[in-house]
Image 1: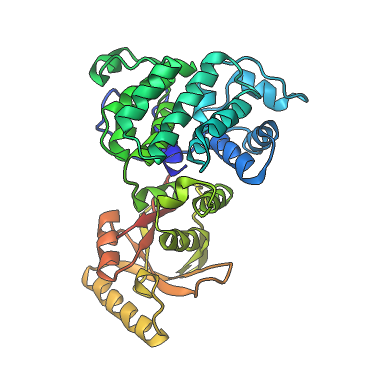
Image 2: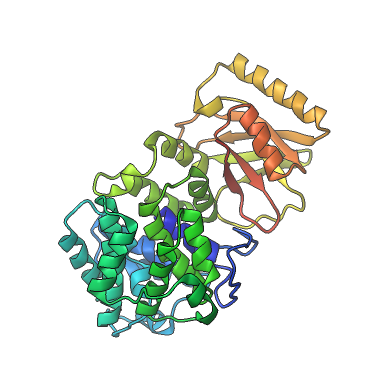
Length: 394
């Protein structure tokens, strides 16, 4: 799911704005999760909590009625209708929303049946079903030890997905296309020439077309194929509301899914604490609350929330923490930084409050280097027009 949402967010500003290159700013202003994330979460919520797929799609779709990029016209009508009849769509909304099914710790035939159940509420055209099954089967095979090349070639043969071109051949002619099979064909081409999660998403976006959906589906497979990094978890947590992050933390701890094998669960627990914490900046004229809620910031200068306390989430005594913060304060003064007091607290009470500094004007890289000096896992960084960002430092 992290790969799914990451690809969606990175591709979100390039939909209908093809760039045809892998050399681009990873998360420019305007980046956001889209309908791809919302409906992928709806699928996962349905599986996790035994909610019928049609009810889950309607709940999530109506709770987020105007996502970036928007829903297709037929799906919008379906969301508002009193019945849940399918409309034989052969659009890429089917393979876009079902990646979590491939992560289930069950037989392949059980996963493929769930794909049919999930797609048939709206996208009951054979092309949509085959495309969605192809994506899920590749993920399932990767989670059971098959090589990426082998898994893609098997699925392409079974579901008649074209993988005959190179990216160099495909890129110039790729246009915006909402149909399922061409989308999955593009995804498979991308993965056959990628070597990491980042290269997968960059290759996907570089094709142009429906970039967020291509990158989202490709990211979902890349998560099963390549090493995942905590910096990407932090980026996803920064751009999504707590409702989505809570669902992610639940599934990554679930025995029912292979997601549990992707990350260190202790580190995920730390990240959940950071995500759900409330941060306060003590300005001269009052206290400003900061949350990692995906909402855009309006501060005119960059602000880094730093502390030297409790390195790597290891609890130190109050005296030790005060000494560490004094050392950090001296470093800030030596750099000529402006700063005020800041603190963080966990509403659930699982983490002790920490005191630190809100530092004005440091670059993100400078802030990370200071945090590394004091063995901090992560910092919070604020920039105008961007959400408050949890930045991984290890």
